[in-house]
Amino acid sequence: MKNFCYTILFVLLSSLLFAENGEQSRILVHTLNYISHDYFFAVKDGKVISKDEYEEELEFAEASVKYYKQYSTGWSDEDSIAIGVLIHRLDSLIENHADFKYVSALASETKNKVITASGLQITPVKYPNLQNGKIIFRTECAKCHGNNGYGDGPEGKDLNPEPRNFQDNERMKTISPFTAYNTIRLGIEGTGMKSHPTLDDEQVWDVAFYVVSLRYQPQHNNPALQEEDTKKFLESISLESIAGTSDEEFVSSLHLTDTFSLAAIRLNQPVKDESEFINTSLKYLDGAMELYLEGKHEEASQLAALSYLEGIEPIENQLKATDPDLMEKLEEQMQQLRKLMEDKHPAIEVKDSIKSVRATIVNINEVLNKKNFSFWLAFLLAASVLLREGLEAFLVIMVILSVVKATDMNTKKLWVHSGWIAAVFLGIALWMFGGTLLKEQLQHVELIEGVVSVIAVLMLLYVGFWLHGKSEIGKWKDYVNNMMKNVVSSQSVLGLAALSFFVVFREVFESVLFLSALNIESSEKQSNAILLGVIAAFVVVIVLAWLVIKFSTKLPIPKLFKISSFVMGALAVVLTGKGIHSFQVLNYIPVHALSIPRVELLGIFPTIETCATQVLVLMVVVLVWNITAGGKKS
Image (cartoon, rainbow, N blue to C red; front, side, top):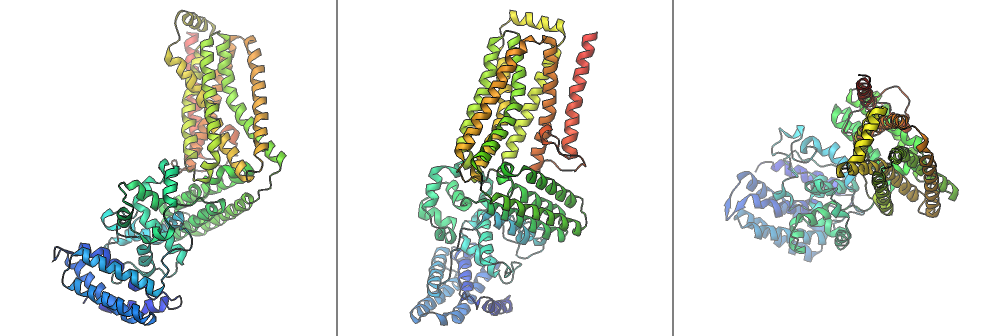
């Protein structure tokens, strides 16, 4: 029978491999597992439907008998006799083309008895980490199975049989993480699936859980996974059950009627602390270096990006709350590393770059573990960030309110107020959940900030051009006369409210994330200091707003509009830089470094993409202003 010699050799090697930890019976359990779910593809209605599959099942049955004889000596006589009867009966059923349900049931029963008799450990010591599993999968398995597990990896094309497709629901629904664990640990003789003796038990469990979860990864960010009902459902299922039960068995035992429940089980991850995120980042970097040394530059660059997105991004705001300079340094180092990889620089340069990034990340971990905030330090940090963000938003709102007040258009004034007040109330609501969002992997913070920035830029440009068009006194008088004759359309007032909302909400959103991070960083012991800092900053901003608005009516209208349009154009350039930077952090936009200082307050980041886009927006502003000015002269 084919591969018989490989089978005998594999038995001997496996004996040596597992002799020290007393897990010799694992290979027997592994074989019975395969019989219990793969026999379905070999025989149907008493007939062989796949010759290759059936021959493989015969080999598994024969191997089971051999494994039993070799390993049963360590069991009790009662267990040894009972399991021997079951294994020989299983061998007979397979030879006689028995129906799948009988073979599968007998193989599962035999497997369970072997586990009990041998005392085999079938549950991970701690809950497996899917992120770590993904890292190991990308570096160890993707070359054959493909990045997303479709069995389409470059090194798997010439293998016979082909690598397993982990997205194949018909096959994967019968495979538990424990089954996957055994396959990864032991391999499959006669195939390209080799054992992985260099991985420890924790790593193998991480990969096993990740492989079984692959079909559900698109639902990773489903908000329903965080609902209380879902969490209660997951709490009712033990880790032992999750590790040893297949999806098909869960559907049967729990009477599940939807795939969401299965997704919740397979994607379940306990909340990670900062150190776990740091470890995730470092592991991705190690994986990136391995791939780069193998000449897989694009894949290495992807892992380097994931090192930031899945390791640093979820705790970015906590770091900004304690050491913004360190955060800035890491971002620049990460951008430089990805640039080196994309340009295929020598491995020694990439290695040195990764070494520098690792040193910074280790430094970050040390900073995050220092939770010794005093009352006044927490107060000053909270007050300073809210004052900065508040003044930035106020600068635009002040201009809008000044113009509205100068024209005595109280209706529009109310719409402006409604916009920023709505943004503030939404910010308060976000504050109530800010800590929870940060403790769960909030990986789309940069995306939200980037989108809001783009919307704010478009609205600022529109309003800025509108104001500039009215800065010539004749046109301004015509506009005022028309406005006096016509009722303000609902579209224009809603647009004004939307502008007010987006300008303020962007700053509120950033402030909430910062303050939530600061609260977590201080172990929630300085909540009163943070709240007092927020109130103090808010009072200062309100007082400044009142003073400016009170005296803004003394400014000439055309001059006021010119100043206002200039301010809005400048802010549009600033927000453009911040928005493009957010998309670069997400790896949606490539990074090409520039040797210029980073001035985050002005939205200036040392990359070609951010600066070029800012220059483009600035050119649009200047061009339109020149066209408007030329129209006025004529």
